[in-house]
Length: 480
Image (tube, rainbow, N blue to C red; front, side):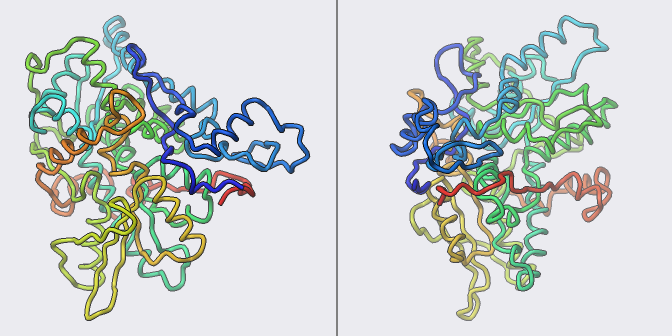
């Protein structure tokens, strides 16, 4: 029997080949990154050894495999996790595809042009700030100038979409907390913005976890709705005329973009057409021998046009979207009338497994946890199986250190390892941005009314939420 807890942090289904000219290719992680047991079973699976053994067959991801030791079909980091159809869709999320759209715009009649829109995650901006040797605001303007020099018409940052995601997550947590005594799936609530975690939950953990996952869409996919639904209508464009590129720190975001629920058959358009990592964009700049000092500084665009807020801001949290901190403070006020200004984290196993507790008169009112990295996730899952999870909310992220450490920007040039010095510089740059609560953002309130017809409307529910369900038919007997 193979225990997944023995496996290293191989939770990224996508990595890049850093050889010249291959930055945008999508590859399966090298087998050397897996633990010895995984490698042994992978070799057995690939060579077909044991296929004729008399062991019972197991069903994983809808496919029957011989031998009770098959692990990698259900492992988050395995090629069995990515179907051929998904592989094809992901392969289209590349620099080459974006350049093809740009080239067609130059060749064809203006009536057939597609409007390119780029949305940049706030966790990607510190990468460019460090690489450019500039503060975040100036680096964002330089990045915007570069993207527009390619032919991108609009460049947004996704902080606004993250604000929607946080507000919807806060609201859902309050609802879950209040029904916790008669709904066994109400708590703990798991955050849903990390696609690696979501995929692992759906493909491997199944019904143990999926009912506990917050239904609020991730900032990426809310941004996709904003661009394809609201912004395209403001520009009097059909969604199919808009080509939406998202710049993210993480390769797993490519997998999120191709999920079926984020494609509209009616509109024949995806919310996000292509995800490029920060590293892929930087590679393109190097490929074109772009000098940062020669780039124009162009301010980012805003969904509401000139009425938008010009200042770059961030949400609370040490390098991600800060769901834990925002929900904790909101719940303390909403449920118990307590104002929490500073949050104290208590390290448990390590810096990537931390607790936050709200107490009053010796009574524990709230207990949240931040769990980052595959090994810590395995510890969390083991506690779920044994019914020893005391938390009402867990912020789960696949990457140790959070989103700033995404392999799409934090991997060292040698490949395979995170560049810790780079991550530290990015954390310092990110923390320099001022914090702004989404509750006090007037643009969000305007969009709730003008775009979504109110905060509790059916339209808001449809566009800001989704469902996560078990995607395996049988829990493999070898999985722990």
